[in-house]
Length: 286
Ligand code: NAP
View 1: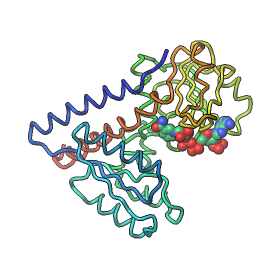
View 2 (view 1 turned 135 degrees about the horizontal axis):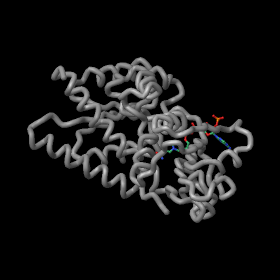
View 3 (view 1 turned 45 degrees about the vertical axis):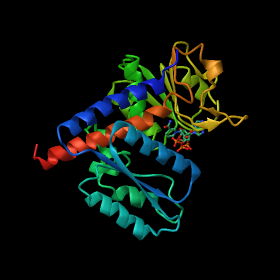
View 4 (view 1 turned 180 degrees about the horizontal axis):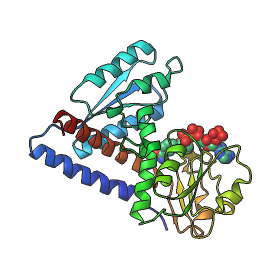
């Protein structure tokens, strides 16, 4: 059965819209997301446009700060510092990738952890490891919502995460661990990947290889979450999982497009609202 990420994401955005409407009616300040976009990368432009549209849909304030490809690291650092200090800004997102002359890590580490709605700052990463209440990366968080939506209890289940990136593989593995799953993280050096995956009650595919996982990797009745966004031989969007080959074996599967992908923006908006509430509470000394 498909897990309909598009529908679930729309539901979450509608709930956010109502919450922001309520803030407006109560005369409260409205949450704001600032997105920094450096250069003209086509994919980044599309992502940023979609984030801006989603903010408008839920009634959140947003602005996109477009900067020249040639901007110096120093100048970009100043932009981030200004956003850190801006009382009206709750969430800061620096769209990746940055041009090669800029150290990504230096910029991401400069973002105020309270406004770090991507959840990439070391403070938020540490909080995630410790199981403390920080800002969690959006795509992994979206996958946990999808599992909640099908009432899937991870307690004691075997989860295999394939891919160990800092933005997907590692954080989603930690989230599953906190939900009491037994978690294995696999990667490009893992041996006997297919037999490892066949043990998984939940397989999380996050490697960026079109249709890599066929039925040989899937246990009957497994839940398959496909994070990959790739193009197939006909230039059509596809995931890391060979959907047609796997769909009858898996109990649940996320399609690409329309599965994990749409959740990411919804979680970005939820993180911005969370950052807003946490900052408001701090201001009010709660
Ligand atoms: P990444 O940083 O490139 O990491 C890929 C991971 O997959 C690495 O850990 C790599 O292992 C592993 N890997 C590569 N080939 C493998 C193989 N043949 N067997 C086993 N492991 C293999 O990728 P990412 O940023 O996590 O993204 C993964 C995919 O998710 C991409 O398609 C990306 O576009 C997509 N994505 C989607 C969303 C969304 O919103 N839906 C968000 C983020 C990313 P090593 O560490 O050993 O190199």
